[in-house]
Image (cartoon, rainbow, N blue to C red; front, side):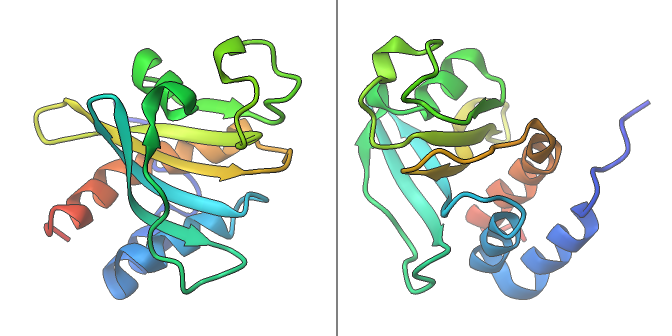
Length: 154
């Protein structure tokens, strides 16, 4: 028996239907202390920013691409699981990411129609944030409809 949808899932779906991808990212971002909420696509050794919501500058629609190896999205890719990092400057789980400008991260894997790793949905910030594991169920549930919106199925 599948788990019930997380709290706010119906409201998330409504924001996606009525306002599209940008409204859905803004909806998700309102539930986190992080400045940014984005969708990144895996492209070999690169991480391509597909869509971005910046809490401080709502005119921003896309961010920079970056090497996958230096990003928390690489951990989501390698583990295929969600990830929460409150302060990367003191989190010793990922020594290869020490020095990253992203200090706080909360991410979930996005899969394509065949189940392949497409990318990551994430909240992130350049300062430490009290990221919460309780953010993850909605983020994980949101990955499929967001992928559908990216592919023009929503």
